Image (cartoon, rainbow, N blue to C red; front, side):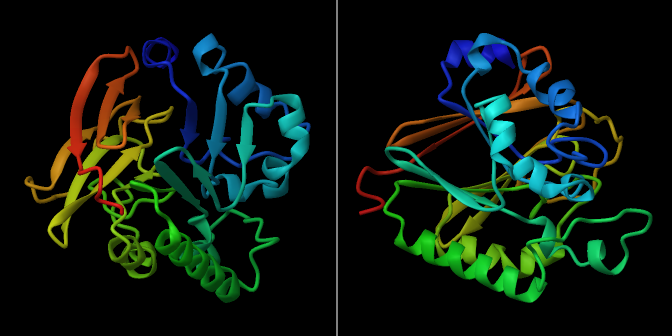
Length: 269
């Protein structure tokens, strides 16, 4: 990943959640922050800003620890918030906190305890999140709009489709002509293309950061499923005002899949 980032001269890194396995961080001094972040991503090209969303495993620990400015003091690359926007010259990334959408974490938590401080009452939290996202997308003049969350919307992996996101989040993405939805959660690399009002929305799963090789894939329309790789790896995204180049790599930096998208310069005007 460091070698590829050096070749591309990346501007920043996005992490799609489940940052600390299996149960998040215990607190701001948890040694896992060093073990799973600082001491792992050491390559010079990765000493850029990291924008990070929370995953369901992060909610099993102390969520406020990951959001704390103390971690940013320990490593200024780290920036994790519940939902936020990253604006560049012609692209906006809308990072969304997806874990509170999933019913089973509330109704059937099994042996796990989730840290819902700051989320309850849940209905208000989700309503405000969706309203703010819809408003931000509508107001955006960016040529490219990309939404990032931990959970899948479209996936042929083990977790598959997240019904709650399909019901509540997907309509907002489609109504606002979002170009891509990027996620983790399924421990694989995956690319699904869905037609939307004469254009296409790309669903990109980059969940191959560690635990992988699950050995299961669900049936999916082969015209939509452009890539399914069951192992570890990562993806890159290079953008200009008129072009986006998506590339998936295995852990050795071998290219698994490429996809390019073009749009007119006046498409967002």
